[in-house]
Amino acid sequence: RALTLEQLRGVCDFVKRLCKTEMLTYGASPHNDRLRRTGKSIKWTQVTQHEICSELIKKVIPRKHACSWMELVSQGRPQPGTFFCSHSWGESFRDFMATIEYHARKQSHMRSLTYWICVYANNQWQVELGEQLTDSPFSAALRKADGLLVMMDKDAEVLQRIWCVFEMSTAVLNKKLSMQFWSPLGQVGGALVTSGPIVQALEGMSVSVAQASNPVDKRRILNHIAGVPEMTGIVDEGGSKSLDPSFPEGDYEQRLLREHEPRFAQMDT
Image (tube, rainbow, N blue to C red):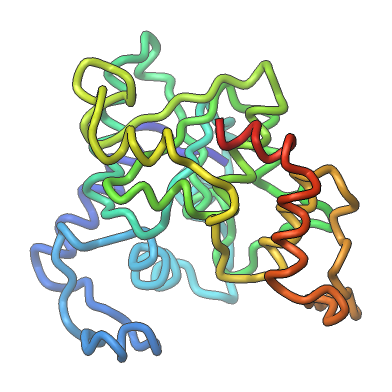
């Protein structure tokens, strides 16, 4: 369920036009209400994957006909992913596309490139994660990809998102999967990105600061990296998962990080 470079460029052009005509606006949500921007037009420089998901994908694809964006634009044809993109949804889409374009120009098979990006690969009305993390669409796509492309946004938020940490840990454990770090300025470690905040953030990466919007996801992923049963400290009641109160949030995670420090050190280095 990957998008071709041309399909990604199509999304980019479409979003640009929507912004230019002020047709793309912030939807009603507690977050937008708090920022007092509900109903206001979104500038091209400020659009993120959050707005693309809520104000474009979910408006074009109604719940009753739910499917992924990739399924819509490919008309049902399979498009395996050449590269799996690990990224922060909070990065500006403009910067995201700049990174994609930099990366694509350096590939020898530019025309056949495809990128697996969760926003467009998953049905955003109902993302099925599976019983185990290894059953998730993220794991399935990583197993088929040629490489993992870590999209280093300017604030390096990607390093602080637990799902991105999970994706990177999969690459670390799977020696056959190459992992590259790219930014809107080019490849990290390349001629244009040899120092600065992005490089410093990468050098100082720590799994302990990674966060998730769902605390259950964070615990499952930390358990997975530590090598302990994934559902340790989690209660599953009829498919509804929650933290086990006998494993206090925060205390359990810190103990896990201490007791399995060598496993987490693989990520921090």
